[in-house]
Image (tube, rainbow, N blue to C red; front, side):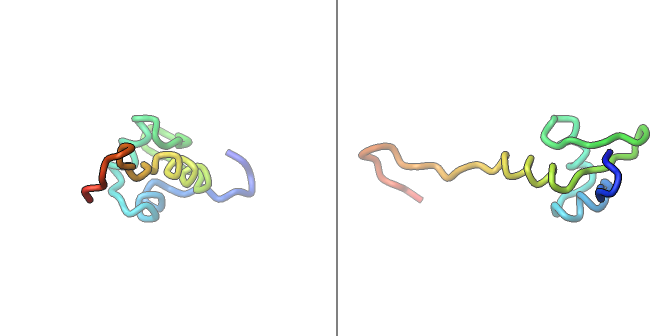
Length: 72
C-alpha cells in the first residue's frame, strides 16, 4: 500500500457502496474488486480503484434491433 493515501476498511467500503460486507467479500473472491489483505480477515480497499471497478461493471441499456421497436 502506498504511504499517504487513505484506504477504506471493509465496513467503510460496504457502507459507501450501500451493500452488505458479505457482498463486498464475494466481489473480492469473484475478482470484481481488488483488496489488500492485511491478515486472514482484514481487508483494505483503494476507493479510486473500487470506483473504477464499479464503473467498468455498469451495464449499458439495451438498444432495439434495427427495424424493431422498443417495448419498454
